[in-house]
Length: 638
Image 1 (cartoon, one colour):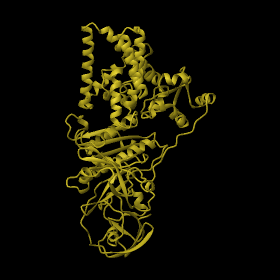
Image 2: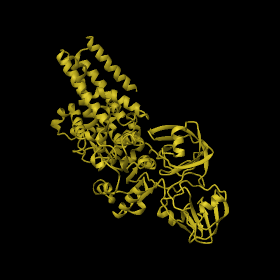
Image 3: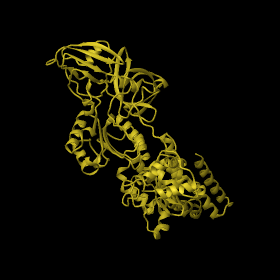
């Protein structure tokens, strides 16, 4: 905010003074160029959504700053191109900034001031991938810019325009290309995909002048590792994580161009200062509740996501925070009284497990009792009964792991995937994530802006592939529905099964089942393919082959004896006995009713929620389990 206001004030002053004859032309050019150079940092942080947690604030600042840095390109186009630079750093074919960083030394002085030309070329090559509004905005800016130049030339004011803007803008472009692109990247052979620690470098030494002069871009490596960190925190991030970076052979050079390996840097550091502590990583943890239980929880806010979906944020009381801790991929059950009829629904948590917030998304279902209530009547300040988190869709995370994840979701299936994606990228700083997300069109895409923000934040580690079934202008290979044929093409080119460590599938039963079968056919390990269904198959009650039985049920530390009629599930018997056993979908999909068999045996009709390890440990879904022995004992607390 400060440098934005200061830069605008400086540009306005130099323009006013020059028009009044109070400043010489070289001084005007110098002051205006300085203002434009500073405004690029505002533009740069806005492109990574680092200015504010509110997307519109970043867009507003970015659009204003973009007019000064280059009036030929819209802010959204610049943000797209810049993210592609992060994703493909040093890749000659796909990195738009390689025009400068990979230039022969004798071409450098000519290429520096023409930095926006490869950006425009890159945009033309990818124009079909970009939204129509963005392309239109860029086209209008180009037409307007050319019109102003032509008008000034025809009226005899071209030199005035050149002194006030055209020359300062080229001078600023020269310095920006030199300091932001060439110095951090030149002569580095690794691409961002090959080795993100050696695709760009830090420059150390003379930092008392270099850091403020380059607005912290001498720590450009930190920016590429953590694109969402604002520029004024680069130095602190490096100092806190220094040893972790050096262990990965981070590229470091001195202000004079000498390249240092880890040991050489440590020696340089020993002579120049003290080593700093590592930044701790916050790991997600499960709920402390012994078994799933309901608590009244206030609603903090209800925000519209799309025309038929809302985001519900909860204000969990401090005394319940431990009980409502969750791991990514878990869900909660909502219970409320609508017109005297109790309603309970199961919803996946979509917030990051490291965020300290609890959020769910509700998509409207025609004639759906709770979804209609949530869309039309639920407000901040209302209270809902919320069950403590359950489920095991996610996988254990390791801050030192370097994994490749692929998630495939359709419609509201994005909700658990989003939590997994957000948490994984925050905790495992070396892991990569590809999201394939199917929807009808852009407007029906839940979390559309949030996914774009995440792609900007984790530019080289996150790739979003949006598949659209009703969008004629969408790229042909991403048009239609997510199905077996599309996955076969992706497995052959984008992500072969041998390169993927974990798969997550969430969406309609038919889609998920078909894709899972294909992955297993192609050699994916069954325990690496994780499936989440919002609705299991509801089957008619079956009594044949089953006899009555006695069951011992342990729930929240107490043991209860219940009887089962022939064909009853363990859950049905527990509910008939008045026990508040946890459940949600009743179709074997959510895992809320999970318990461990301690005695006897049961037959489980269907299972979409438990892993092979869960089954081997004796866990079952009680909504699907019917005794096959005269007596059984199950423990919901285990």
